[in-house]
Length: 513
Image 1 (tube, rainbow, N blue to C red):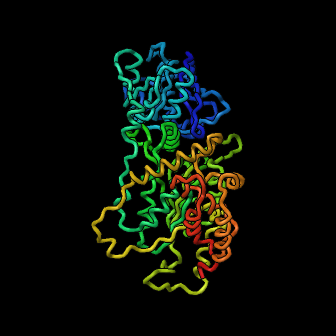
Image 2 (spheres, helix red, strand yellow; image 1 turned 90 degrees about the vertical axis):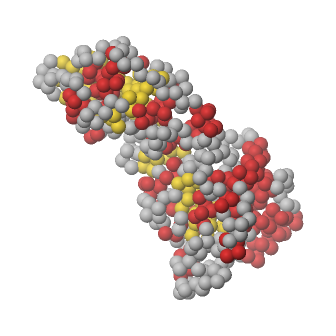
């Protein structure tokens, strides 16, 4: 008897429906799986056989052929176990129903018939609704994640017995219901940390406010214990809240990577990813034999924080250059290509030298001559070229640390950032691919960042006196444009330029001796 059930395969952050055809015929008890399955799929027959027998069903002792169509797409992972098991039960008459073709069925079987969670439930649910399926049956751990898709019945089951009871009519399952908008708005801007907890460092807070307002990449340079990591971790709390579309796109990426817990339905706050400096190229940008999103894609619509930037392998840092410009990662293989979005703010931190105390106001640097410059040269010019703000972080003195005065809360800073972003949205209304000043091309900088003659003279003197490089010119104008937006100024004033110039520390000749 021939029976069809439906599963799904995830490529990139999108899903493709897979038809599972099972034919049981007379002959020796042999099992065949065809349609480009990987080893995990081939091994599914052993899991299915054990799960059926321990759950009170029988595995047919006949020739079983499982075809996974379309046959030219490679099928990977263990999430097809439940799809195959359901088709075998229906083909052998143990499940009698006319509803099989109305549902997407996915789940990994344990040997006792219980279900393990799968990856990519959200994009699978989106594709199922798009193709007109009535519902989606999957492990209960993934039910909330899939249920944020409206107009699709989502049923979470704990084991294969519940699925059989549902199709036989012996068990009534309640569909998982998640109010997407309530879920989104109730959890919006729920951050664990706040800028009000930071003592002192007002100039650094100002720099991060500018970075958030214009979407600028930033590097924090200072001695150990100055508060670089603490400040960076609070940056998402002053970024504009995610829109619903951004939240859905971010959730899709985390779903594909298997990073959502059973309690999560939607990513409602901007991601903050902080990989260790021993990370590999593939782990950072994504890829592998079975391509998965990397850290830069998991940071999409949020912040990627690289602590101790010079300690990262140079090859790891260099692979970020293209994603920083194009805001997406393309992973190519012989038979397919996948794209992962990667629009993130890069925040990096570093010590000024190996010992950490170069330019320290109290402690003396013990590094030999030339070592400081060698340490900084670990960061390539092209990567540094993509960082708009260079911020020097100095230690907080005792009086500021012991002060009882409460600092400004993140919510107040975020309100100013949102107003500046609204100005930029209006400015780029004809360019839907642009959202912030940091994304402007050199040509747009010339058009939108015009400065007066006095401003030109100030910029010229600054570049000559401080020895700023040519690449600093556009960066200064972009940052000055953002500072003007924060001040609700239509034109870039002298004071806006002056403030932007101070954020080019690493471009100054002789900064590192």
